[in-house]
Image 1: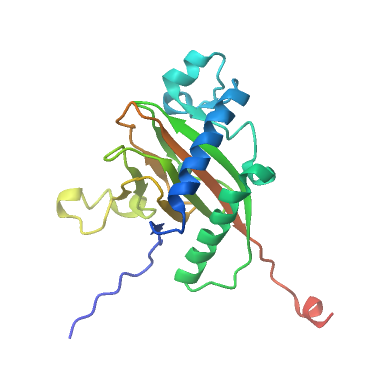
Image 2 (image 1 turned 90 degrees about the vertical axis):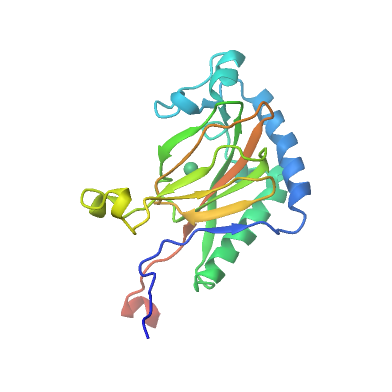
Length: 221
Ligand SMILES: [Fe+2]
């Protein structure tokens, strides 16, 4: 009998049946429209993203897309409790799925991103976080995928071109309205360009696991 072990995996989970996800999505969409009004100097995405450029006109946002990342931490605003609470529940679901249900987790920051046609986010990670999450408040069918890179790619791509490689280079998730995706924050990922004139609206959050190793002395106290 032969057995295969998918050893050393880096689990990504999707949740497409969160209770009331459609209502959350519509509410977050409206809130994001308000954030765009409130922060005319918000961060830009697409080709302006790596340089951390901010909008200096509405035209900038139209051209590159919007992120509230630099303007406001949504975890600190009561009016976003409805979605922050859902994020905590989905992070906890991830921890249950991977067998670490008791790991204490804290959501550190959250933000909104709004894409118009052609907008995208280049490759990045979410530094200083353990787990990250996205929720699609609006995503038209077939819009650009969320693409993760195999974190071991540097070890194998030189000798295993895709034609002979059984080691996966990338893993993609198709966004759709109401879908949550949770992933380890160190995974390099990018989003492909949005393919519609209808806006794509995303809630993102970073979480940290709270842990410090106790010494014998501390345990005895
Ligand atoms: Fe990201």
